[in-house]
Image: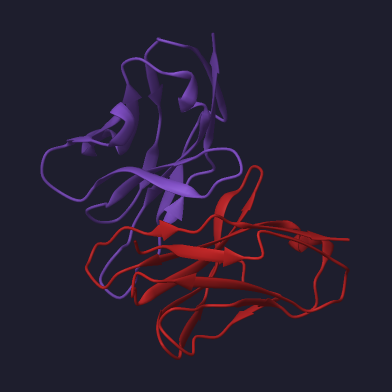
Length: 113
Length: 115
């Protein structure tokens, strides 16, 4: 069955370190999204991609970057981790049909000390 | 800009009682609306969606939602809740047009079930 996976599921890092969160989907979806979830804010969009080599900034993109070299993967990089980036991160994907449903991964809990 | 409001942060319901979770949206065109559920420590699972047609939509786990354009609402209902329904529920709106596939989420409603 098609799925979307994230790794690691839990990560503890230190302030200033570079961190990369992986997202891999086997739906063959063109669209991929990264969200962060914080209490009182729901899900906020960080970055998204509509296809290979395409990346776009969401509403909370500062301090984050993504790259899309193939259809299946959209890694999220925190260039220099900050305590404010402690959060739960979700990856999602959707297909080319409009409108289409977004399917979510299980999430990565990141703690920045 | 599109937005979603879930006015209830936390709702407590007795097992077997009926449930209604509120969702109001602001959107400039025909909205596409979604309800997702998140169990503790899990990702988001789609409960149901409204794209067009019948304004009363059925979803998984016995949930339904009604789209009311005049009230800009898409409330989620269940006639009799089970302890396993305890979770966080998110309403979302979008995408706005082809080529702009983003969703806007509400802040969520946490549902607690008491015996």
